[in-house]
Length: 154
Image (cartoon, rainbow, N blue to C red; front, side, top):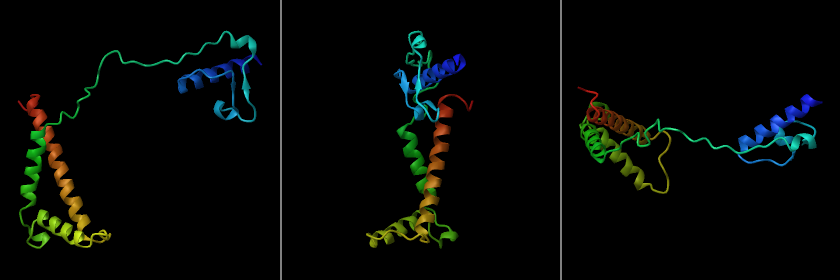
């Protein structure tokens, strides 16, 4: 019976530490993980157990909060750097550019405004292709800009 008492006290201490508040001596069976009965600490053990909520504080900062180091110049240059090449006409889009095809599909779908584009509409292909290209350019531009700024490419 003594082992059960210590196990019960340990479970109650663990539950109260996890939840961050001290729990009363009586815990419902559902919250204690024991099925079929409520848990009650014996009076002799109650006075000797003290549970405090602990707060973990990092001693030193190991990760930079401004990890993105976003720069407006990079955003503008990469937007321009993707818009210009996506505006060049290619044969796979019917001798038009990705940007022109995407803009035309936006216009066609806005003409039917209350109803959105269907699942088989070319709009979705243009949307995904254009945005994947844009975000890839932005990612690589940010890596290049910060790499040069931090001296990785010397």
